[in-house]
View 1 (cartoon, rainbow, N blue to C red):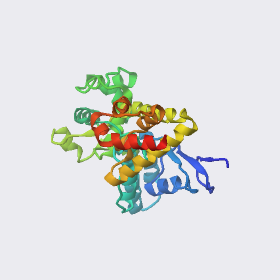
View 2: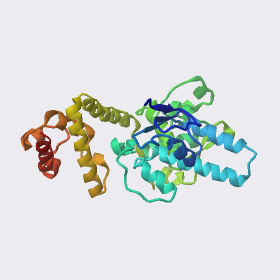
View 3: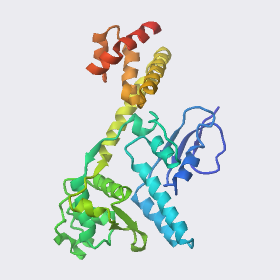
View 4: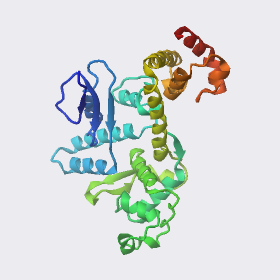
Length: 319
């Protein structure tokens, strides 16, 4: 059977293995429905989405330009904000998604934030600089211009508006453009700024931003760049597993089944027990004692003490 990749609506096949959102959906309801097109045959499937602040600007513009009632616009904006919250969450995406529909759940152990937990950082100072830049430039500019001001870029537009003379000019030179894009995107997701479509996507402050600017509220954000490196590390384990051969792959799957049982017993994501890369290395090396097991990457002293005897018993049974 040939697996299918779905890039849009209208797909009604049971063996879709991959759903790609190349544009930001309009709501969590839409996202849930579209990702549900994958894996209808009960086999594993992946969903992937790419988005940026420009997508949010475009969606809000379309909402406000529509001839719908003000109540419909308010609901549509709230749905879009909920979707952005899912995109930017550092917690389990399944928990966040089901909570939106009124269902309680435990971390799934399968989404990207469970498998590769994003690093967070104290972004309070960066948030204050970004919010100050929004305010001092008159709340009339989008993220691209604000980033140029913060990073001290003396472009034609910056000089024309004399923003190179502002106190915030160059105060954010310590962060690169990618990091600043993440800061502005998350400021919108956290409700400290909002996009004004009537001002061509200009960012404006919200009432909640006051506490941050006054130093009364801290801000924690996902570390975007670090997350990419951690994704690469996660994929390394998958590469090892692929090189194990039939026998090793079988042992790898048995180790994963044991891990899932442990995760359910402890009510924690599977990655908290052991990462895929660690299980793959165990399946490859097949350590015979605790000393050999301790040499496996990811097997610290606490994990060795807690899971070592069980893992050795599993390896012995599989020999």
